[in-house]
Length: 293
Image (cartoon, rainbow, N blue to C red):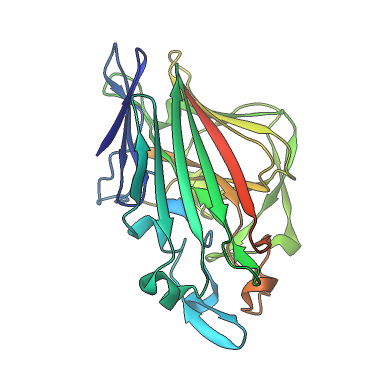
């Protein structure tokens, strides 16, 4: 386990999946991250690459060849190399090999950089296409889960709320099963905070279409000043999720540069909704910030 520390926070990241596993407030020892109880969901904050969400029938095609890949891709189940690590930053790296090419026939280099400053943790995704000729089609995203409530004396699930800035009515992409139904977009009024209730997630994740506008999604207690705010820039989507009907004591705020297959998807990876297309010998970088309070 790789640890970052400053006067405010202690952060732990597991090289398995380069997964953010713990964020504790130093003075109160308050744990913000969901601790992966398999009774509800056995992960903390998986990295979603090279797809976000589910493929139709867990398959896609490239150049006439069919490949199998399960939900959210394979990066979350791979061990990353620790490229560098000091008291407040760490870089993790995953590169293509025979195992990944059996699922995804592309060369790539994926790096995750974690940087701690005060109460802020910045997570940066860096994707490189080392191929001199072929495009690299991919999606990437995060899936961090936060304790709700944050502690034994921090109230219950319904004592928390979601606030989104800018305050407005957002386009909401519904899900039909695991697939997106963007053709029947809805609206979600977020001009006022959204009080948490497990029934909010009876149709799976709430997916907001951000149109690449910088957005902050804040999860906070109505009883005190504790919570977490996730800010992302130039991302097409953010998902808000808690498993239903399990009534799990956590909520995920998920920054996405990609989305699950559309109901009408034809299975061709290059046709996939919101797929990134990285030109030969070029790089992609995106980031989000987590502020813990």
